[in-house]
Length: 155
Length: 180
Image: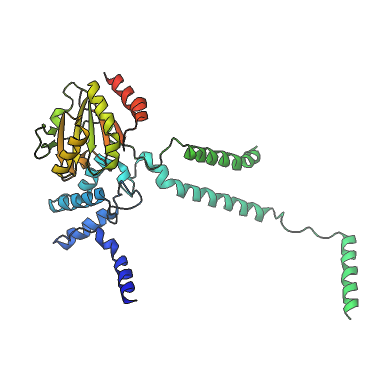
């Protein structure tokens, strides 16, 4: 039982196995981790290189760290990778004219939907078709009769 | 009139959605394929020594684009698909159709040499990329990958994964013919 528990706990620690030795400067280490989290692993495509165990992801982590230590800015490192692997390596695509649909499309759809609902509500207020029409006299009489019958039966 | 347009709207939305799904279900489409940014770009700068202990020349970017079309194949002895595509390169080398260069990716020199000894060597020169840095320069996601570099040193084609005989016929050879 104890062994099983130990093994389970060790499994929890597995993601840590995908880490490089920490950099001495905690600030650089922090930058390295945040860069690693936004760079996509090109083999296991829905993982970042931060969590991937693939060989190429490890190489890219090392590369990121080496460049940070060499004094590159985050932007320079991103540009370096984009030049080789394309925008695809970035989990957060750049805002450019050809990515506007991607960035603003969902907001546009939401706005269009909100506008549609607003128009429908205003129309309904102005013209309450939904409200039931008043009863005709004969219907009124019928209702009266039915209600009377019911109260008569119960008493 | 406007009201009528509104009635058609759901149909239009459906048609657009259906077209998108139809495109997505196309069996020719590989959703995991990453478009290469290196196509029509100059081959990356690199300089690699030969595999330690071999008498073959090493490989550097200076070897590419000297008026000759070249295939650059990134391979490793530990990579099984590389073994599968190897006879294709042997065949091309025998026909002497195109210059074939190799980049030996993250391999132990003795393993690489034993592999070439066993399967034959189609490469005019091999650079040993022990650290995998040159692989990153080429933007590879794994091995094998093969690039066609034209006379000016511009990358014209990238093949991810092993080259099947069908790929050779339908993709590689037509491009080589066009470049020649």
